[in-house]
Image 1 (spheres, rainbow, N blue to C red):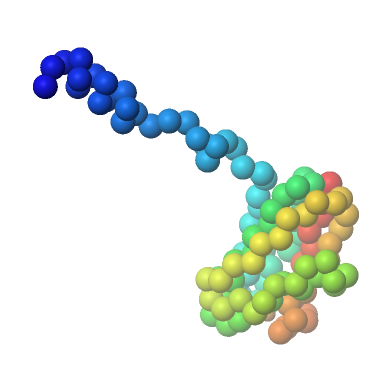
Image 2: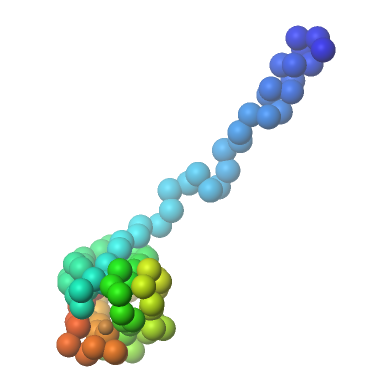
Length: 107
Ligand SMILES: [Cu+2]
């Protein structure tokens, strides 16, 4: 193989920049552990996707008090995500254990 051919092959194999490298929309995480949403109040900018992860040994949900979002029952390590597109305060609770509450403040 000539050096020219090798150089062309190397160029062809170089990684190209794709849309996947663009910064994604904002995200935030709430962890469910030991019957608590943590952080209990999370403040995020409009457009943020909040992901709840159940790190507890028992099933939980995240259900908006105002009916804005509703997760299915999350078993251990399962997740639920919701993207907040409007500013406001979004209280929520666990429908399995209604004393578990939290809120998302979107600014
Ligand atoms: Cu629960």
